[in-house]
Length: 360
Image 1 (tube, rainbow, N blue to C red):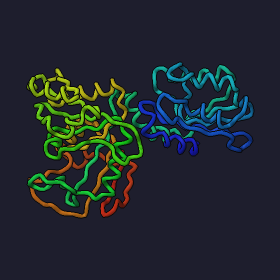
Image 2 (cartoon, one colour):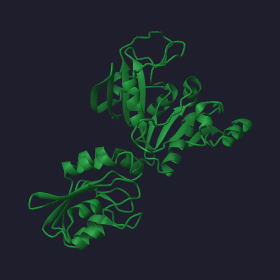
Image 3 (cartoon, helix red, strand yellow):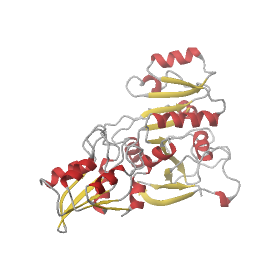
Image 4 (cartoon, one colour):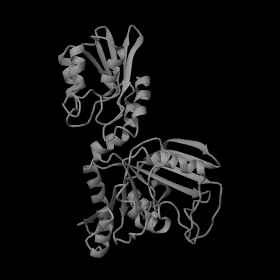
């Protein structure tokens, strides 16, 4: 199962909104076939593993798969039916699929075929692997990754708002890799105006083009900014309020931006409406690149699920210099969100810390 989990990771950034899945087929203690879900709309892990095994049936075999085999016709035929036909002795499943189209039905089909089924081997590891998929299924919003670069004294920029460049080239390369693995990248309008970012993955090793999302209640986004001028080539959604200037809306739309006027009244309600809409569009994971106001709003709503932080060996000082997460924050140290399963590495001269976020 550990081998199957390792195989599954190779689909990261290519299979969303589907889950990452790996499969290993064993006969007499020897692996005879393995595969993983490599591309959205393409064959599933079980199909690749069966083809790799190059056998006409699976009698005498055990099949290890990281997620319950699908039981419905989607872009591909149901894997549970394929396995039932080939009749392995056992199918070992790391976790059930929470998708309502599957949710136990794949396991039920295998049992109907008199195949022994075990569920839960490396279940925690499988859940961690597909945390974005599970978040979309259970909370109907994207899995949100907070990313920022800061100085050792915790500043996003100087007191004058200057931030180029806090982190080094090695860290910026990692950011492009992160961008190439997500369905969307989200920023606040202040970041667009201050930094004029393009928000596209470069040198990330993927052909994925993530949706660029700007939270801009006052519709301050200038049509002359890179993000607006490149909207014909890179999908761009600007989420604003009903009070947005119609002329600015029209100018941005002419450039190719999708401008959505949210009916929600408060900033927090508009943000929740945006996350719900992105979930409806099956946006699995969303990289938030700031600024402090947007990260703070997401933190206050307990919606930051994972963080990637680049800490540069620099000091800016300044009481007015921005820190990464604004908003209301917590009142007591005991209320702090915890970073779980964290990793710390060197990234050039920077320290690179990443981990999942727990609010309990």
